[in-house]
Amino acid sequence: MEQSAKLAGFFAAHGIWCVSEGGPLVPMLAFERPDGERKMIRLVADQLEVGVERGRQWLAENPEGATRAVLVIDAYVNLPSGKTDALLIEAVRFTPDHCSFTMAVPYRNCENPAGFAVYRPKFVDASGFELDASQLAQAFFLGVDAHEKGAEVWNSHIDESQ
Image 1 (tube, rainbow, N blue to C red):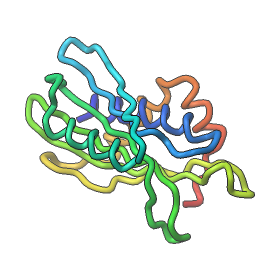
Image 2: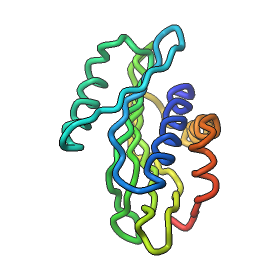
Image 3: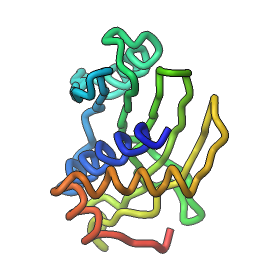
């Protein structure tokens, strides 16, 4: 699952870069083929929910025969401080065996008077494998760091209070 976590981190960083200047994120689906080639699809639709559903359907069907895939969507999570914007990252490994995890990367949007901030990621769910949160988190952040612009935004706006 480490390679899936790296893929998730890379595209989570891309998503953070996208939302750092305002507006909701157009749902993104990224996948890796067996030869290592990566592709990203923006799931543009009149309603964000339609794009999200198309992404989840893609994850369920895997029409490209991908080895792993990540869906990144803009959503909300409940933190102790209340309802908070977040990127939800749904990561799936298709081979050799099917397993998945979901993470949330809460953020404070730039329209907030305090400005844009990225909070600590949180594991939400795991299926099909024994979750080793520290190992997956390490791989996730290797993926974040591999996205030059996303990592720059992430690291310059980190707020570990949440």
